[in-house]
Each structure stands twice: as C-alpha cells, then as structure tokens.
Length: 120
Image (cartoon, rainbow, N blue to C red; front, side, top):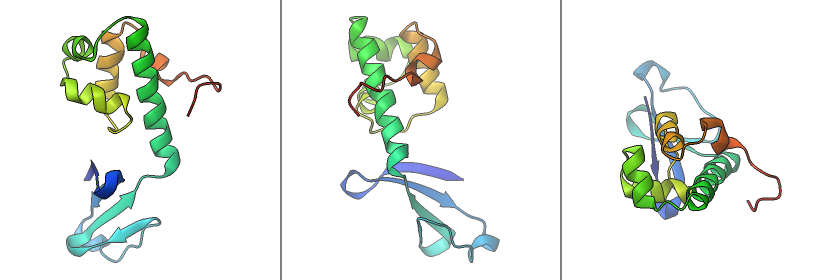
C-alpha cells in the first residue's frame, strides 16, 4: 500500500507500508521508521512533471475563459483540488486528470504536451 501526502515544509513524501517479512529491506532514497513504514521523497523530476501538468491545465482553462469553480463543477472535483493541481501541489490520479481533460474538452494527452520554451 502506498500513500502520498505533503510533508513538513511542503516536501512531497510517499509512504509505503510493507509486509512484516520485508522489514529488513533497504530502499534507495528512503528512511525507515517503526512498523515497517518507509518514507520515500519524490525526486525533483517527479515534482517537475506534476508542476508542468498543473501549469498546462491552468493555461488551457484560462484560454477557454473558465474559472476554477466552473472547472471543478464540470470535472466533479472539489474547487480546492483544482487549485492544488494547478499549483503543482497535488500529485493527482489519472482518473482525476481524465475528468479535468474532459471538462476542458481536450484529449488527456494534451495535458502532457509541453513546449520546451515554456517556463519550468
């Protein structure tokens, strides 16, 4: 089981809860704590793609003249989640990204098409 959340000082952290037999496994870029829980930091390139997708969603939404509230209603997700996704604070699911793309009336693949000239 893997859980993701924003940890201390805005650092993204992924938690993997491992079965007891894996307690002696050492994972790269990980910290082990009690009860077989492994805290793994996202790599910078992981956070970069989350940020790029968020910026792309915002650009498409603004080009279509939609507010965050309108997008949230059309995509059937909370308005606060739209803001977190656009700011790159939320590593959202593929299902949610598909809902957003459908609400924006673009193919899902459009959210992953980046120009190299765009700011990172």
